[in-house]
Amino acid sequence: MSEKNNIKSFLTKNIVPVLFVGLLLFAVPASRYSGTYLIQQVITRLARNSFLVLSLIIPIIAGMGLNFGIVLGAMAGQIGLIFVTDWGIVGMHGMLLAMILSTPLSILLGILGGVVLNRAKGREMITSMILGFFINGVYQFIVLYTMGNVIPMTNNKIVLPRGYGIRNAIDLKGIRMVMDRMLEIKIGSITIPVLTFIVIGIMCLIIIWFRKTKLGQDMRAIGQNMEVARSAGIKVERTRILSIVISTVLAGYGQIIFLQNIGTMNTYNSHEQIGMFAIAAILIGGATAAKATIPNVFLGIMLFHTMFIVSPMAGKQLIGQAQLGEFFRVFVSYGIIAISLVLHEWRRHKEKEASRMQFRHTSE
Image (cartoon, rainbow, N blue to C red; front, side, top):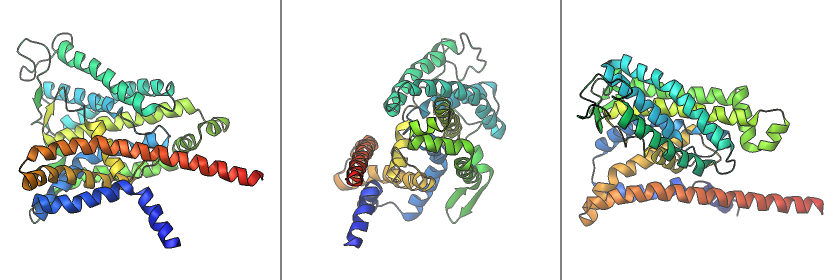
């Protein structure tokens, strides 16, 4: 009986990753991709996306749920890349300068986000999503109308023919894969971007260290019970704002790492889906809106992006329609977030019921 309960408890806590493993067991053979190709693609996606997904962990520790507002940081990172491309600064220097330029803007946007979310306690996730849409409008206005008009732009290759506004696509050839190729090793036909993984590893160590600091402990206390934390003398609102600022700054860096891997930036769309995909990945790894760990990040990226890789080809092989795989990817992204949030609310409801029952038995 105890073993059955353990299995049931494991499946309840890990239903999303278990479901995805089951889907992959079906989709991977159907795609007919070679093992070497899949391994290379998964390594590439891990290097490209890990930093972005790691930026979600801090707000979850602080009890602010899944930060759909990481798109604010992504927009700051892209503005840094626009300036670096305009000035013609290439290589690692250009990438680092883009990060430096994105930092103050990310901090300002993070403070704005934190202040707004403090006014929407209990509804942080949907509020951060709507805030992302609002700031996206401001970003589009700045990039489309002020750059080259109010903000001087000297590189005609990235400015629209009318003389102001940035082109839809920017070639990032000056920093394309600069971090990935600076230090890489080859094992057979598989290439591993070692420097990128070192940077990601350092970020993981910083998160582990941060959790043990006074600020990290304060965030954890706020995540567990905001009122108790306030009674203990913790500055709840200030600490929540700091968690969003940290997340936004990291997201800016993550977007720069993401785009240097791709080598091209879609000025008006590159940032739009990163919040959705990063959140879907961490949830598929077994995280919830209340708890997330570093292993959740890497497991989620591997499962989610393996499905991304194989689903179009699996759809083509099975029914002759690769487009079905594309639709399935979008369906999975939104569906997995919906399922995870429903499960999160269901678990909270069960925990409250259990607490009430325990209190009733104690009082009797």
